[in-house]
Length: 278
Image 1 (cartoon, rainbow, N blue to C red):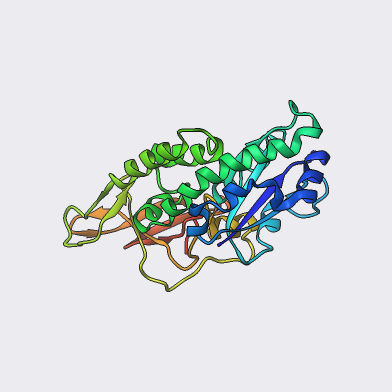
Image 2: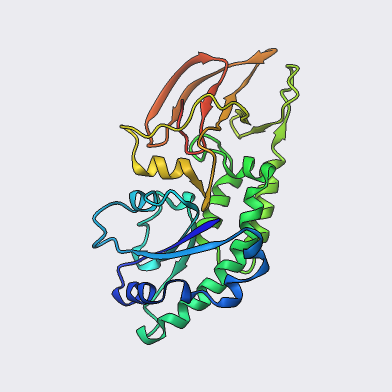
C-alpha cells in the first residue's frame, strides 16, 4: 500500500527539510511497526508549495496513480486553503512559527510518529466494509450532524489522543441510522438521514464517476479518495424515499461541484460519495 505524505506549505525551510530527508523523517520504529507491515505500507514524502506549484493541489495529488493513501501535512498559516479537498485526505495540521528552522527535522519526526500511530488504526477501520459504507456517505446530500462532525474531526483532530475513539463513536452513530424500508418488502438496510432519505450502497457497478467538463480536479480527487483512503469509483448510493408501499424521490439536490439538480419524481437517484449525481 503506497502512502503519499505531502507537506502543503509555503515555508521554504520546511519544504527544504522534507526534500532533503524524505522518508528519513519518519522514525524507523514507526516505519517498521508491525501495523505498518500488516497493511504493506510503502512511503513517499514530497512537498507542495502553493506559491510555486503551478497547478492546483487537487491536480497535483491526482498525478500519482499508485497512491492508495494520501496524507497531507497542512501548514496552519494557510488557513482554509485545502478545505475543498480535506475530506479526500488524511489531514494533520503543522505549524512552524514557534520552531526554529534548525529544529524542523525533529519537529517533523514528532508529528509523523503521532500521525502514523493514528493512521495504523484508522486505515484498517475505514477499510472494513460496514464502516466504509457509513464513512463514504455524500456530505452535500446526506443530512446528519454526525457526518458533519466526522468530517470536522478528520480535518482538525487527527493528532489528538482521542482521535480514533471519536471516529469510532461517530461511525457507530451513523451505523445506528440503518434500517429497512418500513412498508415495502425490501431486506436491505438503508442509511436514513434527517430528511428521511434512504441511502443504500452498491452493489451495482453500472456507472463510474465522471471526469470530464464541467467536473474539476476537486470532483475527481473527492471521487477517488475519502479521508485519505482510495475508494471504489464504480460504486454509488441508491437514494430514495418511502412512498406508500414503494419508493419515490424528487426535489433539489446538490452535485459534486455545487451544481443544482432539479429531479422530477423517480424511483431512486444514483449518488456517488463525492455527491456526483449520475
